[in-house]
Length: 415
Image (cartoon, rainbow, N blue to C red; front, side, top):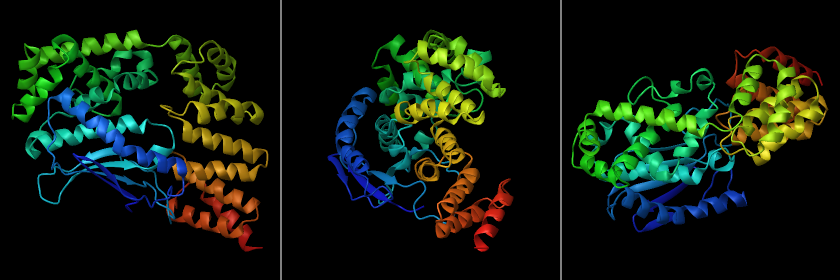
């Protein structure tokens, strides 16, 4: 992976080096980079206060901003690493703790990268305050719960799981209990709510008192039992009950209608989606469920061939409701498909290239690359069409669209 930018952060402030990645000429992105020192200066004191820690002035914490998919590229594959992450221990001279921000996720608007940076700085401060062994021994839920709670992301994570289809039949399914089952992003709400429960029941300084015990070397379950009273098991049960109660209380208005639309989309019942989605959007324009409904409506219209009806909801999703949305990359693809159907190849190409450039974790990449090659061919950009065909061949040799690409390649060769 190519390092595209480096920001070195020290306890006295952050020093930002020039960015040289694919967004180097993007004024908005350069402005975002310039925010990092101020974000550091505000975040570190708050983290220290809430966790009862003091970051050493020599703490080797480094912030790196890099491109997840650097340009130019010869092939593409779906990016599966975290958008933002923290790694390393800082225990060894010359081996800093690295907070890594992938530039695309600072640009595409789907995540709040500023609160995510604070989240990662919580991890960094924890790593800087503990030995490798002590930090690695912490349960994942505890590390993530503390970071989410301090960064103020609890309600955002709770809103995110409201849209999880597994929760439709049983909203309690996403709260199996701390340290039970697989730990993934859908468990982050449970993690954060556990720390919220600790602070609610035992005082706002309880998480900090817990962290100090952990830094002193106390085992996690024993430290929790000391702060919360009783056993870890009783704390876990109380947290699960709290999480379920908070999730039910936080369910947005119209959730039942949303579930009906979601299930219609799953069954490809486009007529039902088109009948029910407009009413939902009209009655609940500020609902956190709006982005999903916009996508399902736009997709249904586009697949039905009603491109003019598809554009407004899809463009509204991309331009106004991207933050926290799951379907921005898919919306770009649907809009590009509508453009192609109406022979607006330049507009389609811009959307497809944005999908590849700004959404490295986006799906349907083989179709996106094939469509980009097709658009270049239609625009008489034979050289660029052949370049995208070569990218497709290197990236997706077994794709279901391989025959279409081969046909396009032969057509271009015959000219």
